[in-house]
Length: 79
Image 1: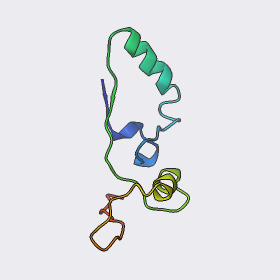
Image 2: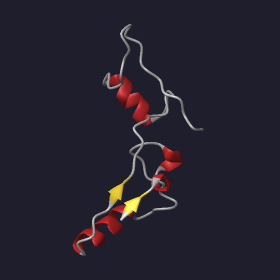
Image 3: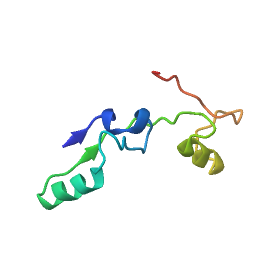
């Protein structure tokens, strides 16, 4: 089973919309026991906003791609 981006919270990477999928870990475990694999689609993008936990963690860990001048490369979002 493939999950599209609709499972994510506000379409942010590495999140789950708890309203739409309140028991996703339980579902994943039930599917696994039945031999069904659950695949989560992600877009490798992070909302670059202080206060966004994923962004803050990436910034602290120097996890973002940088250009030749050392500036963080920013993509173009769909919002």
